[in-house]
Image 1 (tube, rainbow, N blue to C red):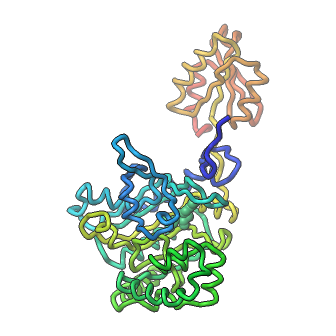
Image 2 (image 1 turned 30 degrees about the vertical axis):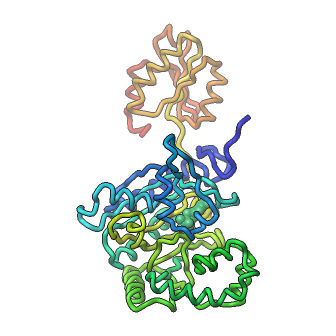
Length: 428
Ligand code: AMP
């Protein structure tokens, strides 16, 4: 028997693990959508496959996604390489340029949600296919948008009932600041080059900042010993002023956060603002979500300069945090009425009656004739409020036998009575 690929999951109501229960997913997505639409953002769906270059150029050659070959790459019939999206921002910037959104009133604020693919080693809270809610504000380099994005992200978490959040805000500076910081780090780590993990040896050449984010314990030990100065100390005057404005705006909005001078984000395209949202129970190593500014990304994709800032919220990790905090999402209600045919002839009667009643109430039918006892059992399992029996004696009298499952009360109703019962306030 074939099984799902490890690290991918089926999402459905009865899924054993909480993060993969469809009502939990829906609760998160719908709440996020309400918050983001309420703030004037517009939904966009981009394809989950793009030309490989979109992501290769987008996430950058030194990001983990490229270095660790985490992208799922496929080839089209013409031999052109495509990839499943490992993050949504590059696609949205690609779409912004492709559809000439630059002539719209700026900023253009877009959001999406859907599957993301990364060939990472599977562990709790880390999957090969996971899902994100993603928000991007494009076309304006104003720290106001950074502060607003952080506030919106926090509001999504709070709307869901999550407490215990920590927003860690930093800045990765402008490219020139990073160049200086990387030079400093290279000097610092060079003597330890042989002791670093294989990945970090490469990072030492290409982008030493990424060493700080390494998941290798050995690297983290070296970092703990060396105590590198944080990126924030290397900001030039412009990036510093920008960062201070973001902090000021957040204070003014009453959004709590702490400045984390050592934040470095996983993707190469970030400039200036970078932040992560952490949650005690998820653990310090894995962020609940993160975001940042990426003013150079559009040019990396061959487009004009388009400043942008945005965030990604990992849906599964958020669901784990909700579960750990005991935020329970009510299960979906069962049908109002479960109509059970008791013999062959009643099957189509049940379907026809369901068709009439469905505009008013939710109706499920028992497709295969069964005994009243078995029908009752099925109705209970489905969480129905009423069960309706349709059999030979009902047909002879032109009625349906209706049983209210909670009270056990049972009566025979003619079709008209049945219609009016379900129009009454009692069943609303
Ligand atoms: P990133 O794009 O790496 O900043 O990730 C944004 C958010 O997506 C993270 O904070 C996580 O919540 C989630 N995330 C990233 N990678 C994974 C993964 N492999 N499995 C599950 N969630 C992930």
